[in-house]
Length: 611
View (tube, rainbow, N blue to C red):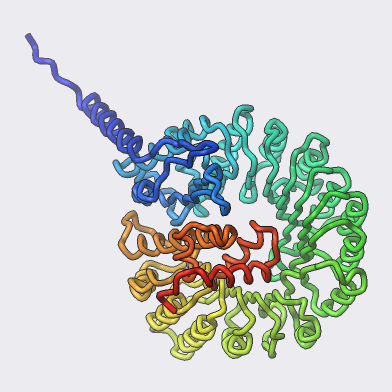
């Protein structure tokens, strides 16, 4: 009798099946059940979160876990999945077929199926479309904010995947989404209209972010008009709309007069320093793009917060808009990207003239030579962008500036000079640094060193965003010292760093970074699958700091009856800018009152070991 011989394909299939079965078993053990109810918190413990995050690291994801709200209500326990590493699609495709990759995919599936407390999710497109993950997404009973991250090197393909995923989810009536971000969705007009048609099927969608220029695929803006029609329907449940607009900004002003559900509207235009922002063929055909907004504001009685970018608008349109909001029942108005050189005086004169009691915030003024001399007379202009698109010589700037963005190499030396003057007031800094190497011109390297030193010497910074690829050892040490010595730096973003500069920066930061209690968000690159000790430590520190701020906030709000652990951590984060803002928001008080509440609670708290 002939001996039975298994073919190599059958043996290989059996091995794959057995590997997948083991990976599913490991993932099932890692994800605890969700026991959240009116009197019981979710089953996730800190140790369970750490174990899951170790498994998810290979696909660039991490779980953020928030235990209870600030008043101690366990029902408000929240789980979020965030992208923490920018990984290429090619790497992910290869890696999710390994054992560690299969465990990560299975873990996501069980997380989606078991945990109804999941409030937001970021996934790479190649991960989201995998059958294991997508089955879990389909079975989620409710969902707040899905975000699909696309590899820029494969953008057309990734955008198609994103559109297919969203359409498949939106068309399921039992799948409820309350918040959706479509700002990265660049699709053909037919697909855009299909998505708009699917939106009304989801009656729970109240928060939408969308780029209108994606819908404006042709000169007639047919897709944009279709989207505006959806927003103007009486049954539209939309309460918050975030819109990235271009030439069709006037079209969406008409929505105000018809949509009674909108409470928050945020319309952004590309800044004037963006060379593609003012292309002639994109300009609106109306004589005034703000005319429809002025008309809509007169009829809309429900809007509470409004933010509008005016980089596409001439001065007269800016003044027309300010005049319209003077008689509108809007609680807070933010105007950003005011671009025309020389309009500063006229703009603020209009603001002061119409209603000085209304708080109109100009969030970003792209100053030019004619504006700089006037800045001292208008402290309202506290957020400023400078670039050589406007001028090549940087004079002394107003001391009221809180946020500053610098784009050009021509301004490095001047920026380094004025940073010492602006240090007491600047809180938010964004800097585009042209790459330089040690072997290049010594004067250029010295200029970059001086610039980085000047920026990082400001210990009042709460957010530092550096667009730079290469850093020498000197600059890495400047940045590390800024992080280690600061009590208020909440966010550090340097995701463009190449691997050697990144390793050097981590070497300068660790192990001292464990003593930092201010960092909440760190955006750094990682092109390897390996989770090294330094990177893991950095992510553990940010996760711990967010937890400390939450505990301290709860203790202050419930003072003198707060929990003892919150009392112990309060001295560590008492100066944290996020603490006062969180307390003010949750307790319904001003930040000044929140700071007084913190001072009172500190009297009962333990002394700070780092003081």
